[in-house]
Image: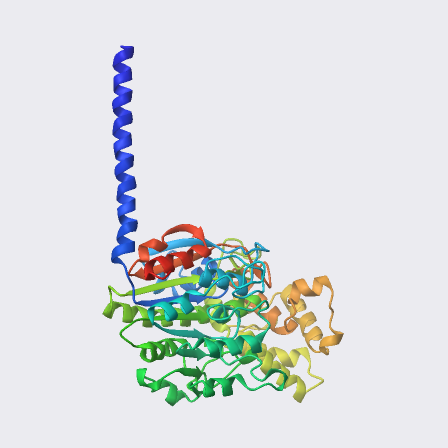
Length: 494
């Protein structure tokens, strides 16, 4: 009996060993298949700055159905991609990293200090970025698009190597020296810092077409040569306007991607990194509506790349991810319990920064502006009304507590900046933003069922979505440095 049992166990062990070997072999074959068959020649890298799962889910909820008993999400273009991964975002110095270090990990495959771009932990050059390598080794054209300035941390991480992300002029010089073929979106920060030759002038001297003319941008082709295309209108700090603040004068992010494809068109291949930088800026300011609309505009830009991929299905790879999460955004707020009412966000007609501009103008025109007068602007731009008044949605009526918070914030906002409360409690309430506008977005967000934990970045992992040639390699859980490694493997650079 004992001998029989031993023989059975040995047989089972042999079968398991065989099955395990087969599974390993199949997995290795899958990897080898990626290595040998998947060779994309058109690579799109989309980075939603500050974007993690909650920002994405909030956009799906707003565009879905909030009808009780019939709740549903609306899928986004990239949430339908077949490969889904999860990447950790910590850097060499913090579990709550910044864009400079995380974008460096994505572009170059190593950890570095927060605030450092394209240098290792010893502040020395480690190697070229994926974009630099593809241009040097394979002759690909390279394009960078961002809704913020093109020498800001994330786009800079694809061409610059500097100890501080704040070295804007030096980063701008390296942008020119990169020889990349297409830059589109926002302006250049500190382009003439210290009276030195303007970065725009340096671009023109290097043979770039520099334009902020919408019609000229929309007419760009592969015959246009190297291009720096800047949105005709700029908002805060040289960025493109928030999507909800755009008008017919603007070039959308989707249009910048479409024209990028035209400019970069060539038989060798291209790499295009596209950043939606103001998702991050909106989350810093705890403005859910501005974040959601910019994320939806980001998704429209991804749809342009997907259309291209469908024409070149065996040659195109699209990767979508975030560099980190911003704001500690949550769906669920103590004051609303298990209830959400995202439809309330439709009452916000403009971003916090656009409201700041209106409010500042009103202050200058009327230095003795009273709270009751300001409430008329609040009703028009946020739909919120004072207690006792009527609104189309009763949830938009301010409670006594909300009214008192908003009135206190108004009083702070009416003071010169240097006279405002700079204490810890004031920071928790306003985060350094205009007290009046940030309190308005907090109240509206909370009524919708959205909460925030920070005005800064968090350590939350972020998703990775991939489509096309070699996309299966991006499934699973891994570190942000592995995104670079996977792109390097698929494109065959050394």
